[in-house]
Image (cartoon, rainbow, N blue to C red; front, side):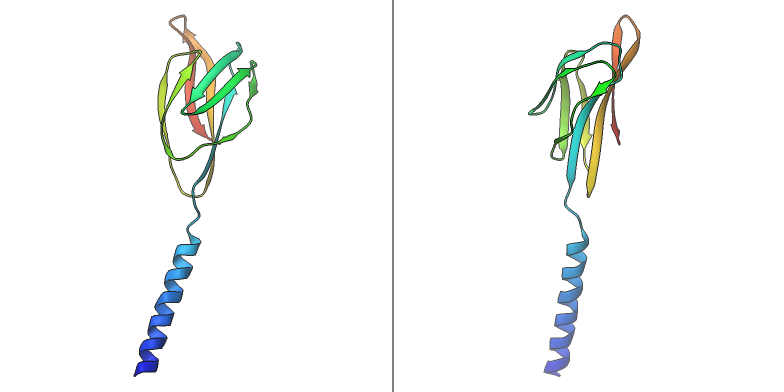
Length: 111
């Protein structure tokens, strides 16, 4: 009787360890992709800062934790959320706007 209880306990413990080891921790990184026709001086995302991004180029990726963020800098502010398990790469895409009142548009996409 004791040996069968011990066996069941060890089997359940093994299953629990396998199940928890399969879950990958969140690993997020973000960059700024400037698809507009104008250079970008500075963009801040939380504590991250991206500087001097020429037109039609992208910055290097920087690590970023999950959370809610505000994009600020050389353009109107915008908000977005980073979440998800596993490895994710995100881009803040800056494009030319469709009017003089909105000269640039911001889109956050997963690469």
